[in-house]
Length: 112
Image (tube, rainbow, N blue to C red):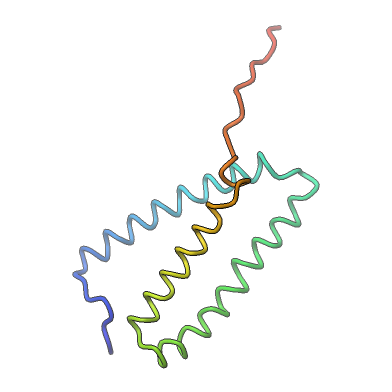
């Protein structure tokens, strides 16, 4: 089996741990912003599009990763996937509506 990025087990465990922390933070922020920013009447539609991207496109991408790795090599495929992922993240961050999300001002409840 070809090894594209040889690394010791401790480094792989550390990177996996950091990835898990990042995913936990992402999910907490996603659901917080989702509940705060998406109107209640549109939430089911937004969730369905999110699920489409999460559960349909992932198996499709895994299906094409093998042939691409066979043609281009494992290392080139991994680097290409990382570059594509970074480009998608940068495109999202570049959206003014994403950068404009702020924590709402705290409201105080009237006394008594």
